[in-house]
Length: 281
Ligand SMILES: C[S@@+](CC[C@H](N)C(=O)[O-])C[C@H]1O[C@@H](n2cnc3c(N)ncnc32)[C@H](O)[C@@H]1O
Image (cartoon, rainbow, N blue to C red; front, side, top):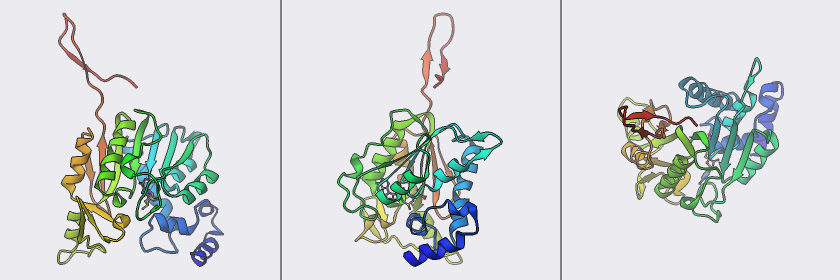
């Protein structure tokens, strides 16, 4: 990795905008496809597009409280930190959680602590933290009940087996405010099979092995890459109380955008019919 880091450093040197990025070995660790070297612009654009869509569709805004589960080296925090437009800036709070202590330490050194927190989860994941002491199923996010507007999970559920996936979806439901949204990306077995049909661009995955409900690429390191059936993903979101659940057209991953229902309170008086109100937060 050292030569890749060094070559990347040289490539980025002339561009002030690219100097703020984490080292290449971290970017490769969180996934930049097959771009082992020239990935700096792609790394930035990917997160910028995410926030453009999130702000445009109203699932988040510049004042939102955001929890990024499996935050890696802060790809999504970077856009928020740099958002400046004629006096407007990100004024909410971003919390990133991850099992990778090295990437979290880098993030803590590079993001202002008043608006950005990075918290370590000591949970065992065969791909990312084999020596973790906690079961992923028992992880409790370090956030109060109903304290977040958006929980995002980019390419985390592609590394969780079923029990952990269920537990994380439930935790997301707990920490979201009513009306808040969980947006996660996932690999779906239907998309993998479709990509193998004649005339289609083949998928690099086979997912021939099963561990419970999960389809895994490598049974020796099951959490290296995990796919699920669409009905299963939708089912665990519904069981955790989410609805409506929107899916965006699949690119490399499928996107699930699940809303926590607003609390419905029926107010009955003797003179008026029952009314439905949504309490303001
Ligand atoms: C493919 S990377 C994606 C990182 C980041 N979301 C991004 O898109 O840049 C998956 C991340 O999930 C983290 N991770 C794996 N298991 C986890 C767990 N149980 N809890 C929290 N984070 C986890 C890994 O350390 C890694 O940073």
